[in-house]
Image (cartoon, rainbow, N blue to C red; front, side):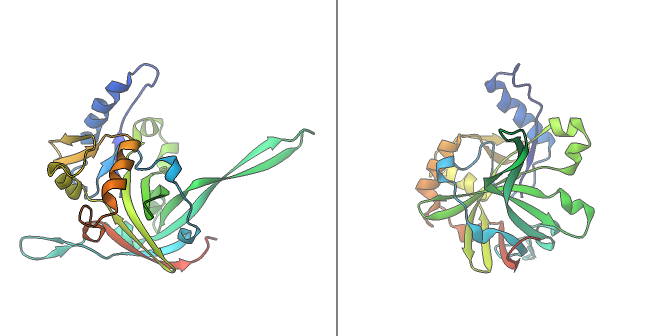
Length: 256
């Protein structure tokens, strides 16, 4: 669903201009050679466009819907891996609880709901507990989108080196919620490459020759402008013609 960039950054000693070359170096080491979704170093959204949609919370089953990759012998191969469709998708708004002292010195719990969701791919094997993502919903021109990024890995608590050498990239999906179902369509890497080559969009990017893929490097403002201009029109971005699409069916309205 999304990628990790291995990156060790000392913010106090490293100038911002040095971050990108180092990030790209570690991107190659991370093995980003089999991606169907376009990845960005920066979020695809601005805070002013973030919204909450209570209807997305709950437990969902998932299946791939469209399209499939057609090989030379006309065989069709699903682009998704097993965990993406075999696991339940548990989606819940993040709520942070902190303990503070009252004026009388007593402890009190402060509940602070966040403006984003946690997505957990939950299955019957221990490895599936590693699939946790942060999902931020945002609306542009009355269309609903989601920004996905990794939101933790149990191994981070076991290895300082692992924790220090990873940071997330972002993927963009269009979202349609219809009662007990939800459709997710991720903007494809090849689709984005074609739009850039045809000069349909203007966005900063880096072409990584060794892995034959694009990495978007533009700001969130630049990415938002791209979405505003192109994402809502089928002639520019056909969300029904992306490689990575999922159909979710609701299993439970509320998480336990």
